Amino acid sequence: EERAQRRSGGASKTYWSDLKVSLKEAATRSPDEMIAVWLKSFGTALAAWNFDVCERLVADSIPAPELQDLRKVLSRTIRALRSGNVAAAVPGLELLTADHPAGLPQSPLDDASRGATLVILGRIRLRAGNDAAALACIEKARSAAPQDGRVHAAAAEYYETRKDDALVRDLCRHAIAASPDCPDGYVGIGLSCESQGWWDEAHDWYSKAVEVVRARAGALDPLGELGHLLAPMSGALCLLLAGAVRETNPRAALAAVDKALALGVKGAGQYP
Image 1 (cartoon, rainbow, N blue to C red):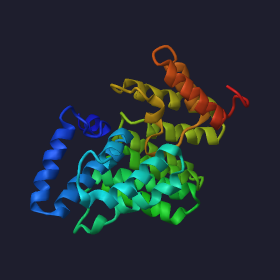
Image 2: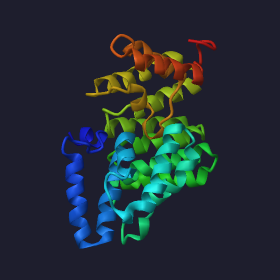
Image 3: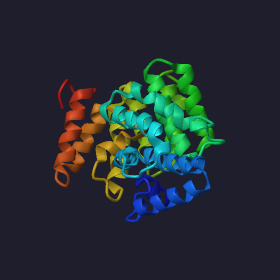
Image 4: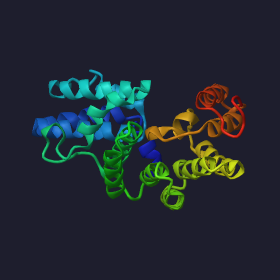
């Protein structure tokens, strides 16, 4: 239930009316408290990879001049993550993961949201070749949210670049044990198998990841579920997903095929 709420970004039927009440009450105490409530809400939505909620939060539907600068920075962050120009998301992610964001006495993000945001930042730095900074982010994420399998899967991605296959598998199994309803650990082992040319074993692990995503209630965007927090994917994984959802969700299947073509399918020729 807690994971399901986190995936929804907290956007229940009364979410917006409740948030406005919370912001109004916090504003009567101090501007800092109002900013803390707003930042916590944004961090929760981002950790759930719920861009719709994030975008509504940075819109002007909740009037508060104190939030103007934060909205500008974090609206650029969401646009960057949506567009794939992820380097432009770094300033906002650094703000969210700071010990004293927006000059607050302490971070308002809970451990799960802070861990997830650090994972996003770590992956961006890893893919930019800034390995030391990437590892620092990922280790902070593991310290903040050890109960979230996604942080251990992110560590596995880092050690995959170091060709430490045994550690990669250990970390992925840790991810699965911590979050069996999250695809990241299964995908991580599948990617490790692919890198060694073990196509059949990779297929088996990818199949488990697809099963997990399809089992999630309301998984209207299964490809997005696989790629949340900028999680790595492969063409073979996307092709498997396309086959699994082609009858129940043709639009998602086509998106998965397009992604498979963009990534390429190892062990299966240039085209699937």
